[in-house]
Image 1 (cartoon, one colour):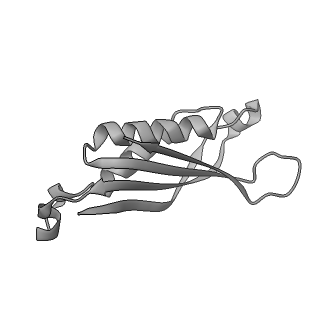
Image 2: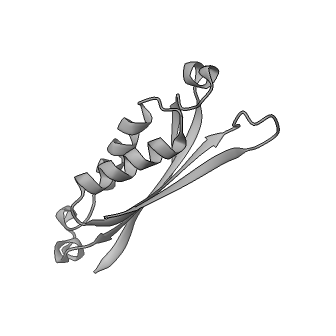
Length: 119
């Protein structure tokens, strides 16, 4: 049976951005991850082996978010690729990364990038 494993609203203080001050002082980020997957029968017998453990998904996101990058597109791509490598049952991954109060010269609550990667 197909389904999705979703983590929403993961919050991090990270050092992503084009400008030097973004990479030195950091900013608040929010990450949402959607993994389309094939659940095995064991998931419906209440066994974790039949699904994707969302603690493992969080660990991937945390690891990638700890590595500074200039572009959110790069960060999203790395999360998606690592997720596909780590979870053989994953069919596709969508990652949304939002940067709060981006330096755009005006008021903006957050700027977001969405990266989708099929297997």
